[in-house]
Amino acid sequence: MLALRIRVFGVQATASLFSSSSSSYSSSLTLHRKPPYFFNLSRRRPLSCSSSSVEQDPSIHVVTAPKCAKAPVPETVKFVKRALFVAPGVEPEEVREDMILPGSNIVLGPYAGHAQIKQVEFVKSSSKPKDCPKDDRPEFAILGRSNVGKSSLINALVRKKEVALTSKKPGKTQLINHFLVNRSWYIVDLPGYGFAKAPESARTDWSSFTKGYFLNRETLVAVLLLIDASIPTQKIDLDCANWLGRNNIPLTFVFTKCDKMKGGKGKRPDENIKDFQELIVKNYPEPPPWIMTSSVTGLGRDDLLLHMSQLRNYWDN
Ligand code: GDP
Image (cartoon, rainbow, N blue to C red; front, top):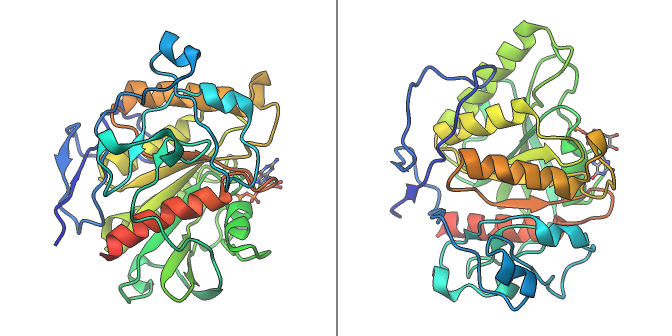
């Protein structure tokens, strides 16, 4: 069995939906659940780079988009501060600039492989975590605040309309939807959180329901936590990330709606992401992988699939 050490992010927890009775946690813990893969999240210095702006500020890393990039990465993304996520199988000193996925902090490694989705089929909706499929296929759970763009992202990933079936109405039965991809791995559509008008009881139900899934699902490779980059950082998203971090659940931040030129309070997505990064730096000394996406332009779609392929292939081996 693969040894796993996962750095868990020191956070200032804020109590609400995701608050936990567990009192303290270390910034570096050994994982007790089944180790899905080794996350090298050691704090990294940015790569050296020929740009003069980098020489002025070593925390700024300029990325050249690989030729395969389909959608343009906004110029401003170059100035988002990043600490790299070094993929399994890569030695930090081996990292080159062209190994970094555009609009992300993710370094591609040798486990990246077949990434395209050729076939997807809906398998089942489960009302309880224990009812989820019982085979050993790896899975990625997709999670986010209501209206974050989760259905749009899932549909963009699988290139089908209306694959994401999760009930969007608060108070309705919340379901865990499993979609089998290429007959080998699952995308799991989880109920959204943070309905502004949801009764307290519905929020609590979501909380225990989804927490049970995260804590007991042995085949969970990673959570894709969707964050709307067109609005300022939301406390409920930080609370969610904190809860996942405290419980050693690997996650990737997927920023949605990065095509929007102006976000809330006049900020652009890259500015909101930069703000988010600053919160990460403050609260998460070991930042998880993150990537910018747009379901409108296709930005980040193929790169996110590549990232998922390397996590999945490492998990499989
Ligand atoms: P969900 O509630 O998280 O499933 O969110 P939806 O996928 O239904 O999207 C919520 C709203 O955001 C809809 O009006 C979408 O058209 C819009 N939306 C979703 N993704 C994007 C995106 O990448 N860019 C833009 N501009 N709008 C988006």
